[in-house]
Amino acid sequence: MTDALVAFLKARYDELQAQQEDPFAAWHSPDCEAVPDSWGRETGACNCGVPARTLREVETKRLLLEQAVTSRHLFTGDQYMDCPLLTEADGAKADHVERIQALNDMYLEELGREPACIDTCGRDARVRRTLELLALPYSDHPGYEEALRR
Ligand SMILES: [Zn+2]
Image 1 (cartoon, rainbow, N blue to C red):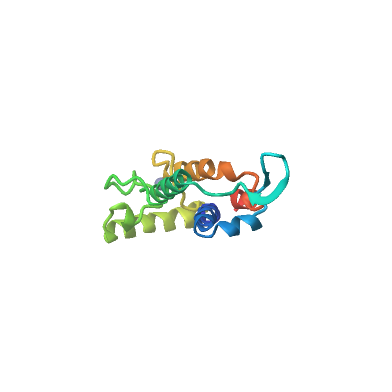
Image 2: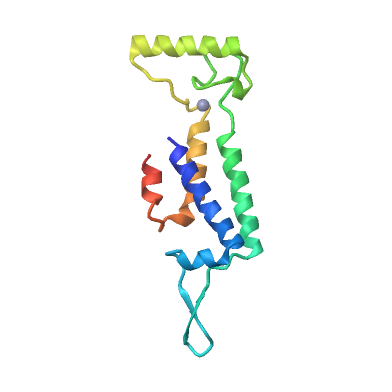
């Protein structure tokens, strides 16, 4: 559900970094506007140069993105309290994850309820919100709406 947003954000960050490495690439970007000289004449120059501060901001956003997607589901050690989406990556042992999976299977079979991140965990909602906020500066990008929908 968040994979499209993660891919969208990484692509935007890669574009910014590529512009630093190849300033002529910016000329092909639809986001660039020509910069007139001090006489107002068209110069063919572009205002899309990426300053060092912008690159530091991109690196910071990459760290925020990584922190969000690697955040953990609720793990209390009580299979009835833990988030149904708990995995070993969240710190649980394999046998505990198997018990939770068995509960998930039972709920799905008896109640038709797919396992989902619970409110007391909130991990998936926090990740989604973080990704939405990170994507907001790119709301005018043609791929923005689709990345939000998927
Ligand atoms: Zn959760």
